[in-house]
Image 1: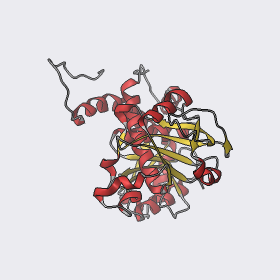
Image 2: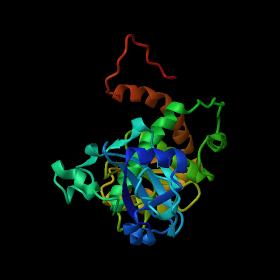
Image 3: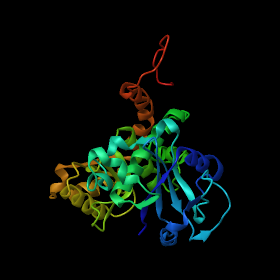
Length: 323
């Protein structure tokens, strides 16, 4: 299992990591050598930027410990020579950084150990281990920002005239998504839709931290279960029903199964005498595609409604979809 750490860095060194190293190497002082030696590939690091009190990036460790005295960072009397190689996971822009003050009462890392007035003590020193649940929460908050950024920058895909389920499957395969399989691409679309709606979204998410079963997609309100989704377009419907039944027992208020049209009869036969039918919705591949495509327009405008900040303007422009 990976471990999670928070590293405290200065604004100047954060910019060096961004522009020079690209978050491909992480170093600590020699007094933290043993910590670096405990790092393993797959461990994750959250970067906390002191002086401004914000989280700015996440990186993943990809090598073991090594020593290197090549000058990278700004400290004149410290080389931070105890190092490991890393790769960037998420890098936020300056206007996207997460202000820690907003999350003081949500992070066990802070609220279980420090008073609200002394939260800054949680980040004293160069490095500390970070609870997994706090890491997952912060990563999800960052991904929410990234999905909004992509929403604003994304070029509209011209819709073809789609008639049947096979057309929608092909259209999904043509979308600019990271995942390869149809199953995973649908899951990726659903995590994005959830992010647009303000949820913290996860793929392959354990129903509870102690649970063996994973949900294909989970939407959480902060850390609280909200929507559980199984994408079952070719696998076992009973397995999906079992996962969603467990999710409902553990306080997910909504459960959804995504299926192909020819699976609907089997689903109805399976749930005929099952109480999960009172809570379960079945979504088609077409419905996911349509929500994903039409949601882009809606949430661009929704972002404008939610936006609340001072802007020095001499005149106004009309708000419309393509802004």
